[in-house]
Length: 151
Image (cartoon, rainbow, N blue to C red; front, side, top):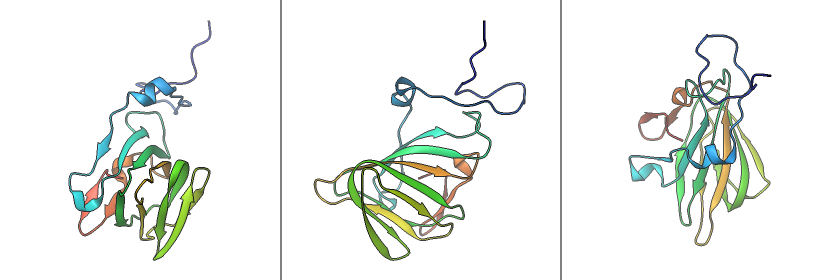
């Protein structure tokens, strides 16, 4: 019998990472996170891939949601970031320029670019975010003061 190739748990042997597969049920049951300070925004997110919880060794990723009249405050971090808009409408500001986005849009945000997400009345935005780091906790968000491990 073949061993499964995919897992979402840390490999105990320290061997090279294996592919990671999460099904819809697993993703649905992941905890949501939010900022402790309202001034950073009311976006929520679920971390999907991040050491040590997954076998990923060079990237981390998650799902984020911006509610109607919600926002992710302007911020920056050293790492570049990708947003793939899964559904909804809103806008993403990057270095002072607002971009209207909707389901199917993709954005590459350069490292250290000042960016944020904004939704108007009746708008909700869902997106996948990806960073070139093994651990989400290594992303340092710079708002008015540094915070770690927060979208």
